[in-house]
Length: 79
Image: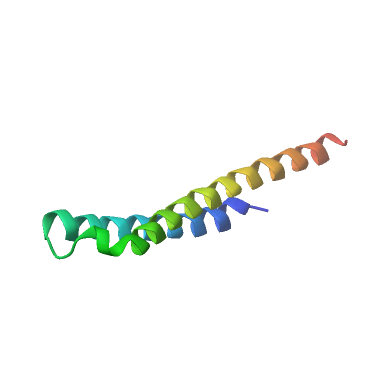
């Protein structure tokens, strides 16, 4: 009945984990000078992919909410 609870929570976890991965890479490259970010491009791509997947999952939750609202409104109107 409430798809945003599932898709929103899942999308938020994916987005935040991707953001944290990328944030740790930026901090350790630019501020701590631990390693060069050019050596860890696959991890950067993984973090960006998680952020994109999280955003798409949240968008799917919004779309699901709109569909549920539309069809529950039709049922209430007797159509």
